[in-house]
Structure formats: C-alpha cells, structure tokens
Length: 163
Figure 1: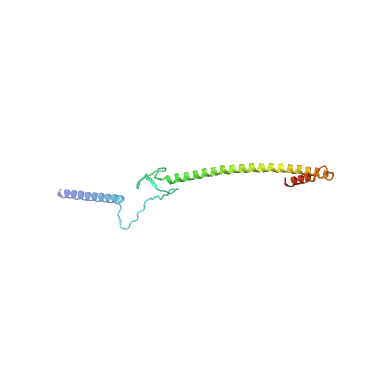
Figure 2: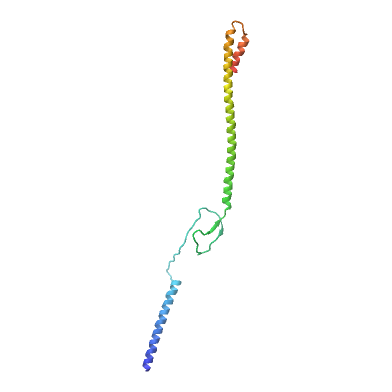
C-alpha cells in the first residue's frame, strides 16, 4: 500500500508541477502581450498628422495626448483677432471705394450736364450764325442803293464772323 501511496503522491506532484508550469506559461504569455520587451524591436503607432486651413496662434487646446476624439469635435481654437482685423480692413476698403464711386458718379453727372449745356450752346450759336448770315445777305444788296450804311454792313459781317 505504501507503494500505492507513493505512486499517488508522485502522480499528484507531477500533476501539480505540470499545472504550475502551465499556469506560469499562461501568465508569461499574458505579460508579454500586455508589456512586450525586446532589444531589437520597432513599434508603430497610429498617428494622425493634421493642419488647419488657416494658420495662426492657438489660443485654446481642447484635447490631451492619446485622447479619443470623434468627428466634429473641436480640437483647438485659433486666435480670431488677426482675421477680424483683416475683415474690418476689407470692409473699410469697400466703404472707401463706395465713397469714391459716389464722387465719381457725381462728377460724371456734372460732366453730362456740362455736355448738355454745350450742346444747347452749339444749337444757339448755329441759330445766331444763320440769323447773322441772313441779315448780311439782306443788307449787302441795299448798300449800293444807299438804303443802309457801310457801317451797318460791316457790323453785320462782324457779327456773322465772330458771333
């Protein structure tokens, strides 16, 4: 019976040693998976390089290292002051150009009025020339007969020539 007990104890020790070895192997594999170690290893990580559409000074950072983010999350804020100043400058330029356009429109209106006045002046001058020519044509035949003086004819010629 003693041999039987010794065999049972030997078998129990063998099973326990095998179980302990298996447990040690499982724990070792698990540790290697969680915290790998090696002298010649390369590690790759998922990195996302990003750049904004505009550049500027970051005034607020809303994420931390290795934080999980979703699409649409605000990651950072860029200082809006330089962009606001550019908008104000562009608006001032537009207002200046609008004022210049108003002045130019007034100048064009004044020039148009001057041109209309000049056109009316031309018509009046042509009417005066026609009148002076017809007056001269009437007076010249009367001069030889003494019905008009030479001075009157000369004055009619002068009016016709110089208006």
